[in-house]
Length: 477
Length: 94
Image (cartoon, rainbow over all chains, first blue to last red; front, side, top):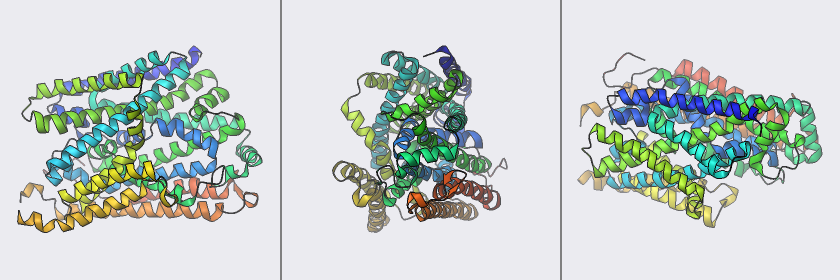
């Protein structure tokens, strides 16, 4: 791999690092360490908010995996990916001003803080904190492996050195800069994803001789590639539509996304983020999945989906430009991992340590514990990623769906339905997680839909029925 | 009941209305996406018509659908969304 490819990547890593150092000034001078370190002092503006939501969500799986699947399935997979446009406005509108006001009243710093105040239940807190720690820790480990593999394939370094570079660069800026560093670097990373996918799409269209020629080539190879039904014709409307829950509206319940809906400065920031977020998420999703489809006639026969994007970038562009574009998937992974790292850190420090182990900890002590926990987490993930245990891989499969099934109703109905109570919340969380793992393991794709659908429906009824059933009991107390 | 934890009714109404708008937009978004994709896309591929080189179902569902959503979100936010303060002091920094 040439230096021309490496230089833009190194410049990018350096820029991210510099932002971390700059953000650490705020951490040093903040009056409330917790609020600054885990929530950026609720001061995000519209652009940074939109970018950090999009970038946190657009992870390695969607950035390398997505175009790879689109390469094999054709336009039907781009259609599926476009279900994610809804995340650009839905999360901020539905959690919206109510969540912003309520979490300020509660002085909540984490999602679990909100659930704690809303439901006043130790079991809600412990169940949610531990599901966040377990599921997102696994998701994070899986992303680190993806990040290291990407550096390995671009630079030709060994997996160990690649993992080390990846881990060190992320750990440093997250440890010293906290949430503010994460959000600001996400803004850089989101911008790189936005521009990188656009440049790559244009280059691919030019290399393929224009859109009509590419579509004709796809049609000649297999007419199914230009239908909504996938290469084998097995992407049914029910299956594709069910992704509106998994990667669309259900995203509202992912803790790393929901926490961002309490981090913005004011209503104007939120309004700007709604517009910018919708544009950015739709644009990135459309462009990067089209790149995957359009790459097929140019570079036929790629067997490993994750390699489609790097290979086609190197094929159709000069090396220095490929280097800039390949910073995009790198940025996608980093921006997801850094958010998960700070979130898991906050769950351990704020939700478990301060709540139950050391409520009167001084600001200075909390500061040391927070930075130490972030560092130790990083080292553990690093060690796990060296030789990933099967348990981590298994848990990662359930991470996002499991958290959505657990939290969607306790968060949303907790905001808008006053009769919701702690029994309903616990029932809903347990039902959601258990059914999701059950369906995914034993009965995937019930009625031709993704296994997220039924757990989300059942956990809704669990929440409502148990809340109503226990209403009298709570009133008597 | 602690008065500080009471959200003024006016803010509550605004917040509830905006959340409902979000749900409405998502339903509209889904309908547009689904009807164009499977309405136009269920024909045989040899009968497809094309716009800017893309199959018509894809062009309307994914490209136009995206542009329509951006326009709609922009319009609704600018016209119907209200800037309210989030803190109890009601500071006018918005």
